[in-house]
Image 1: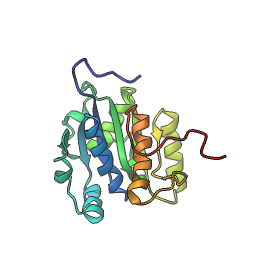
Image 2: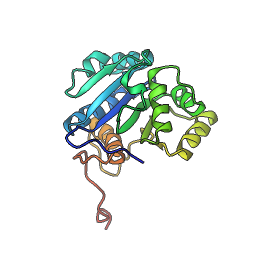
Image 3: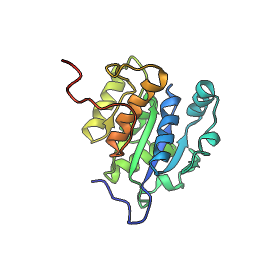
Image 4: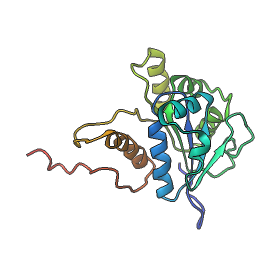
Length: 199
């Protein structure tokens, strides 16, 4: 059951960036959450930081300059994201590497990313993992199935094309829109299907 934020408080999410390719999804998600006036606790693994620099020329500190975003140290297991008593509304791992997914599925909390995800599981709070690696090894599929059976939303970064995307941003927004939908956040990232598109 999702815990609702206290009256007068901004909703809050943990967003974790791990070592899978797809940093642009995370950057766009952070900006969308900021636009929706959510507070975000951002965690970036070492490998996630490498991909941020390689793919976007950005650092974790750069992303922390987005309004409402605060950076937490992935090595600090005493950070707010690690506590079940912290009232956090949603947890998103985007992009989620196969290694991170496997650790969560095995109950391993060896860093703040995996610890915060396990907090979400033990507190029965919404957790979304966004894998991008392809193809999947059988062990990845088994671990994603395990997480799904526990109520985790497994949302692969697989954009659709029925909305006639014109550029990369349209493809990224398609996936981010699905994440925001799962979080119950209103947005304008693309058109919704009406059923009248095919005559």
